[in-house]
Image 1 (cartoon, helix red, strand yellow):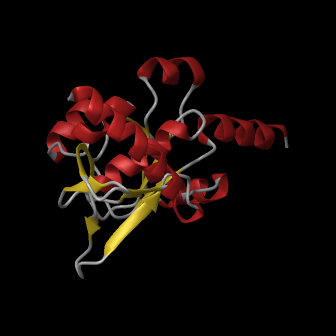
Image 2: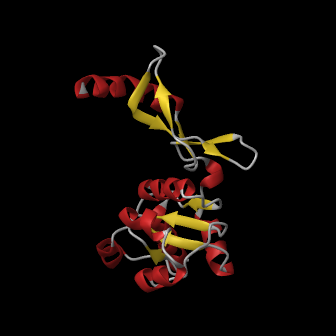
Image 3: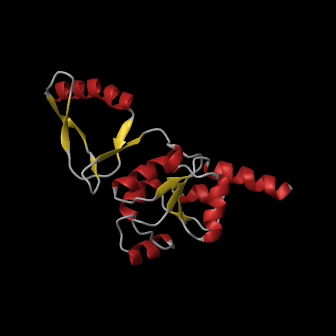
Length: 181
């Protein structure tokens, strides 16, 4: 029985990945129907329902509208209009460095951290917790984990989320180039 369910999953996953979409936020859950018209009980998709009952989907690949360049990130930090959350592990920050003004929330803790109270968030992570409408920019070492954090935040209802695809590597490269000039 379990083997049959897993085989159904292995047939469905390529189709889901081929369509290259995942839901923006969690509202209702339905069972995914395969091409044979049968329902698979262990594979589910979750449509994101907006206020007008339209379904919005977000691509797995990084969409340019959610990406922030080095220059944009510098402006956001200077203006103080965005919360920058670095999703690397604490040892990575000690070893490589961090973007000034960023808050360290390791990727494995992002989901729980964004559901804490403001006081608990400040106590645990040392920064102000962003609200669901605040601009949040996620960053990591090279942009892979920050994209995952962006999708997690969006699924929790955060509407103004972006990520810095270049991550710390791009930031450090630009900062070194500026220091030489």
